Image (cartoon, rainbow over the protein chains, first blue to last red):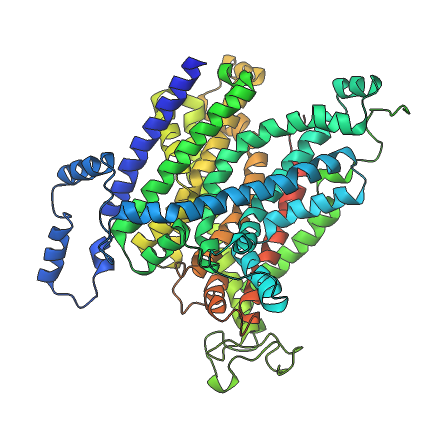
Length: 305
Length: 289
């Protein structure tokens, strides 16, 4: 166990270092951030001064050293527009994004697991049909469009739910569904597939033969089988949610990292864009590490795999 | 408790996904969309970029205030939405097709080399692909497109490059599996060269899984392209694309809902067509077991 933990953590550390280098190089070698940040009519001197002010005309190695020293100390630079500390801005927005991402994950589990198990147990039922179509819809309906449809239906037509902001739990409902829908579809397909495979296995027949009811079979045998692969993919899905929150937070004016990133893009605020990219990726790598470790605890086979 | 046989029912359960009918419908839809893209200048009733301000903000023809000359209504500049939707297929399908082609080319060639020859090259390429995959995809493409600038070529380039690790992973693991099979050993012991083994024995076995992944990636790219457009980051705003239409529609969502609903519907229909075909291919091409 300890060996697995160490090697897995080392792997994550290497990834972190790699991401650090990759983002650094991308921002400096792909395109010219100075040209994007300054207006076209800026003079050559102005450009040079601006570049020097950001430290972008230092030798690349020195730039990397400064950048590394900053990141290690939790210094992610300052925003060009607001002159605020990037780290502070990110910390201020992080809770809203985490709240939304976890709500979306929870929503997708709460729909997909029970519906998927029932659909897998009764493959000819109406419920199974519904599950197939919901799973398919998750792949076909883009989240940003779903977000707008939900607003049109529940906020504009029915007036039941707010269409923007983060005031109460009620304002969490629509963004959660819009963000979690695609993942719910994936989980549903996965659950149905697992139950479909396990349903006719020998030990389920034995359990039935012992007189265990359908409910017992589902709870005692199907559910654990379903949870293991679901935990395995949830790390990847969390990464996806962090990305997808850019759309959803923009549509619902949700005050999280996604809408902060969108604002930074509109302002060509490169220090902030770079800081958010780094932070979100670090966070995703950490979550992936945690899910992998948790996964190895509930399914010891992976430690030796 | 009544005895229930655990054997498989004679009729395959409907859970296997959508079968032949779905493939047929999807294929037909996809052909229609390709037809729209190719024949756009002949099919579109108006120019997609010439607006008539006197005709702006018209709802679709079936709604109150709609006009029969503009079947799906017009946008804030008075541009005909049907014509813009028809031209929009060009951007989406081009990005999907060329983006996936580039990703397959890059990912499959490197995956083949890494899986077949192994060693340091494999270690290096695998580390690089893990690195790219650890960054949330949307964050990565947003960063890159902001740096590169908005153009069709850039969008295709960055989708192709940033999606190639997915194909790399698939091909590498498939090659590792196939390479260990007895018939490859037999071919080698009969004096087959690496090139011959790759060409004759490995490549044909990769086609199935590659095609399946490529269809799903294609619909994902169409989603992402429109999503970037929605954020104002895909092709330049003067080009009629579904994403650019969504970006405008979002601003007027409550007043003129059709401006956002229609392009989103077009994206969903395209994704539906591609996924139906992909699902059908998956069932047809799936290796036994």
